[in-house]
Image (tube, rainbow, N blue to C red; front, side):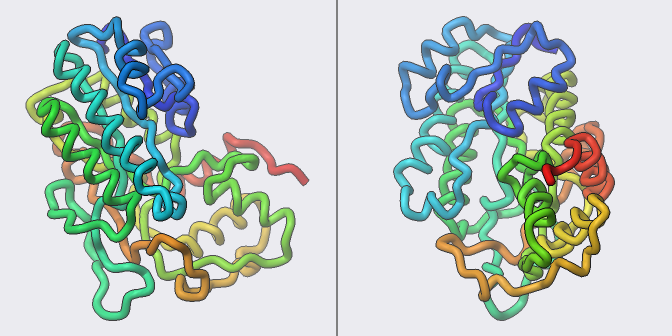
Length: 303
């Protein structure tokens, strides 16, 4: 493992998971938004002043409010494009390795409300992205491109539908756990398909990547890392209810059109893990097994 791994966005769900599972905690330098502000060039420079060749910068910071980004494109691009460019400049300058976390939303796809044919084959890492439907997706794609242009030895790792599953969390699994305790029934969209990814599993996968070191296969590459399998949000919600001992029949299906949001959601955004496996890295386990572990690890919801 490199001498020091900097975790940018250490206060978020993935950043927290990375710190919890770090194989060499003493060699990790967590940086929250208070310690490294991606929208401030001097803040980035100051936080990475000791960056050296062989070090790793794991960037899991992002503007992730998908609906909020529609009304705040400047804010989204500042964090998702301009900030990663600053990191890439820093790593390129000293020969450190930037591992930049991105998203399934970089693919255009069809919106869940669109009529007509829908994709049913996982996106490979080398597939053309097209033009993303959302400001969030467009800003993350711009971030990928500027990172690779600025530091061609960087690695982009796309993931999707990340959750911790803790009852107090605002992610989907945590929200479903709270709603199960509060409502007789919940209604969830059944026309958006993706791969739920347990933050702890993603953190372990990223540590495996870092521990393996930058290589001809991973340096300058785009990889996908999600829990295996595909499922709709409705099916995830039913699984959450089952995990906490509640009847999954209390979850009712609906269409995305019945719950319009400012940002269009993709109908299908499953990512292929072929490039990850081809790099000699361990495929992430099935989403259902991961969900069971998440709910078990996270403890009971408050009654």
